[in-house]
Length: 159
Image 1: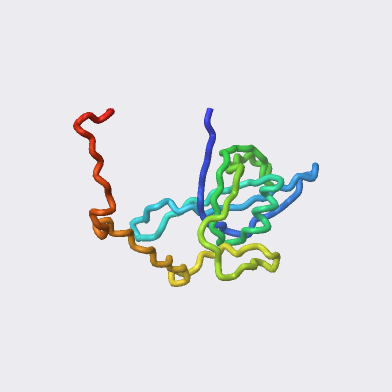
Image 2: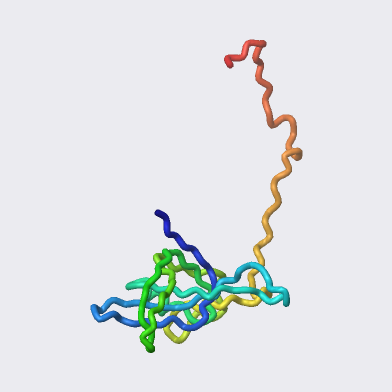
């Protein structure tokens, strides 16, 4: 069986860190993933996916990501059943994160929320650094014929 999910999107809200009764950290957050197509009105379409991260991954997400941050998650899809406030049976589908990664360039601000964490807001296109000019490749036709020596083979090559 195979259950693998890889998504990249932006956080809809700040991640929420909680602890279970046994003391394990768990973070829940929602990611907006662009579908890559537009509706008839020209508006972008997105899916809003719930993600759950545990232990150190949960701490990492809550420390370094905030609303609007671009994030990449790989994990597995999971369903669970629960009862809502009215006693109705409900089912939730969520992604359980195995790995969470930064995506996109660093922002000009190196501190987010005063915690010393890198801010991951994407800069405007004008803020991207331009690559340095690459040196041109050498022109091989610039050399002289004296650079190569003629090998006398007498017609009997060993191969």
